Length: 394
Image (cartoon, one colour):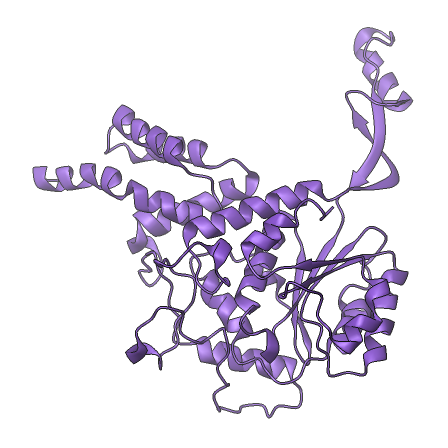
């Protein structure tokens, strides 16, 4: 390696460290000024050419959870060694729809809507998922683009969630982590071993006494085992919700990562999109847009909730489970059917929270008739609304 190449390689980490930290924040890692300074000190300590120890040091600095530790290798390779990836994918600050975006949308429509003709090539109507983001040039309005890139608009707390910056995604992930920690765990009849507890574990204590010649010198205790509540999120992606679908799905994705929530979308039919939420790659915004693109028509909330209760969550929907519905409540089914659907959920012991994009509870007839079965209504038109409601979500 000649001198100029070595100098270029040596200067590369310091020049691109800020961009790499922004990418890490985009995927939920907490990397601030202090962490960046520590990462730079690691480069100066080991030398810029010692990649393996530098990567190990950076990983220890940036990763704080098991999920972040597992996510690190993919992010590191995509940013610093894009040539090693299949197809030469290069990470940048923006995401664009792939050439197969329309085909992905068409395939999802064929799966969800059995009435549609298989093999149809007609393009789906545009909605929030495939409309150009706010602030683009009018000349580019005809070409769909993925939303969520960095922009110079005001902060997300005052916006409707159509444009997302890395710090917005990081704030959302931290907020989801705080709310998840406040969800009340459900006690069970089982016990688990603990350093201190209310009951003596006699069997484990006798086993430990063997090392002490039969003396009970190391007692074992056990406490009641508790399980985190199961969380289900159902997001309305119908025509009336197209301007809020991007916000709702990104909130759902944050809780899918932090609380292991199962996420569903519905309009006239219901579909589970949990696998999309767990694909933590730079193309996740494109996949979220593919889920919502082309959805429209009426909204069958009652039928979707019944399908969710009787088929998708039949074995997991139990006492203590949380069901969060993101919708404006406007239903094309008969008003009394929504009450019946919510009664089935409540009969299994689950708690229902309804998130609506308006300041006041929607005046839909079906929703007004079913208010007695809904534990809480929460307005959520921006990230600030979710932050304000974190104290009541438990």
